[in-house]
Image (cartoon, rainbow, N blue to C red; front, side, top):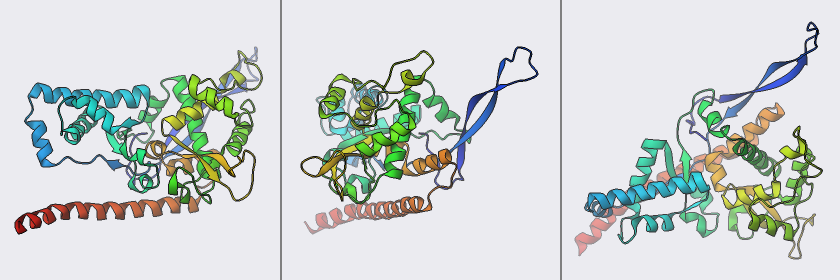
Length: 367
């Protein structure tokens, strides 16, 4: 989602839906269409971290390389980041892509990544980002090495860039729409009064929704979506076959309906693999549907990629727009509190980084 300043007023994107109306004055009773306008607020996404800056010594090492070699490393790294983020849409492993791009040249990974970040930002408007520090500390260690390409192009008041970006392909529109609905249910219907398993402390703040509750809600939105999650065997098929989840209930039709219902099982697997969703076994206060022998149930929560590309604030406003209600002030206050806490941590972290060279200098003088 395009970046927006946190200090700007609420902006909106307008969607036009055609509604059939009958014109009584027309002899053939032909069907005409009127336009109904829906507006969805565009809110800034959650905070993210910039990639670490390389030391002067590493920058010099990259600069001293043969120009052809240096340009090849930065170009290859830029292409890999673009391909993985936009083509495969996979999370990017920083160590792997830097090692592959650098080849036999050692000790220039951070410097090359900084240069690739600048190039992607100047040419395409993408920023190479890491998970927000506050969220990162509550996630498994593998997320600390993840990189994401975030669209930093500033959109206009009508959200033209965002509309063009997400309405180019029907499949992309369907997936994005389902993701927004799932994120809305997870954040607005889930609960943080749980403790996660593998996700360590993520359960302290993160809202989790059990898969049975999620499928039940999705079934209310579209009765062609199964009301129960897949069995363990069915989930395994969705993971290995790439979109081989259960078919929608009923039979397909030429006029839409069932045929337009997405493969929920397969897409949930996809969203998890792409870090848009977190999935874990969590504990609940009381036994519910789907509880396993260890007393835990499978649940979903907003993933780090969704937080950085969409954001909790956008989800809250999306729900309020759909329901034609005011945004939940309690949820907005919680997000604001997290933002303030993150800002304080970033400021403290910046002061520590600034002090480090001074400390090294003092140690050198003592020697």
